[in-house]
Length: 83
Image 1: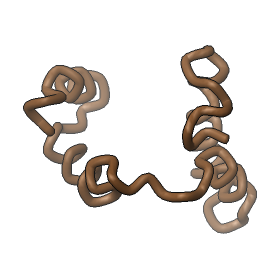
Image 2: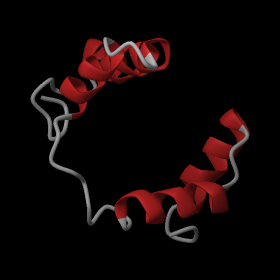
Image 3: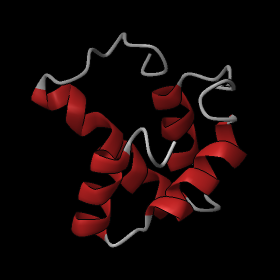
């Protein structure tokens, strides 16, 4: 994966300072490289977590970040995982 997406990882590391091995490790651990995508709609889950009193500040920020690509027109609100 690091070879296949080397240019993307290089941009991410330059912009955010996160090295490719860290991203690939998390990607593999959390999704088996995209094979497991979960069954909860992302925006609904973030909205629920954003108003749960335990870590609402963190998840409200995550929800706003997730809504930005929709606001820009880069992602449809009905895209997989966004509904």
